[in-house]
Length: 338
Image (cartoon, rainbow, N blue to C red):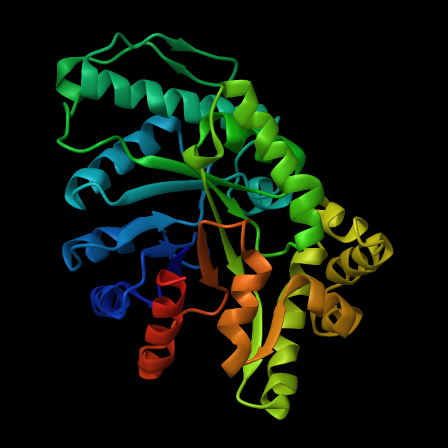
């Protein structure tokens, strides 16, 4: 299993150093998110200052950009990184698309499908000279003149990962994508009942094998050197789980455990701006399902046992801290030699 990490840098000035530290520690991949900052600019700097580590978005929000914009960014980063770029896309939810990004929200699953298909069509045009002839319901690509064609690159086309929670996105990943970012808000029961069966359905539809898709997640971990430290570490993880669980589109992750009513209460609290109260809804029983709770000495073995047979790539929800280099080297070594 590959061990990845998120980029620990609050501004572009810290990216090069953080990326080099992650590579030197032995991480396999470095991911950026579209949160407070653009997810692509840091990866250009990371590509310049690293040699081996894979670089990707987990995730870039899909619909504020067109397929052509993603195709251009991906092509340039793949060339500049010498084949190490992964384009990770996610739909986000209706409220953020309409009220934060100011873009139209319409049929997110089918629209993302067309986006992926058109990106591949663009890359095929640039790499192999195929005629631009993609015509869909949401996107069209029927024009490419020499002035706008960057031409081929000496690397495979970038991998495309998508993120998702519900059935359609899991099937879409299995059918069309190189990887799937399993949402941090998940449980093993949800993987067994929803994620894996639907990925398998998508793979079968396309005549693909499980080995043709990488499954990745960012895991919630509650750890410490002793029980007191573990208890102190619970609160911020419960707060983050509560934030995700308040999203109506994610209620299925609660319902497989019979906790749908908790999700509805959390949604109501979020609408009333009661963010500080939301963590109180997450019990220790729920924490055990949605996070890995263990002392540091047992952490790696417990993670291996939890995700064996499920994942190809794993990140911790909290980014690495280079000041704790010994811990991270041991974690990476343990997974790589498993």
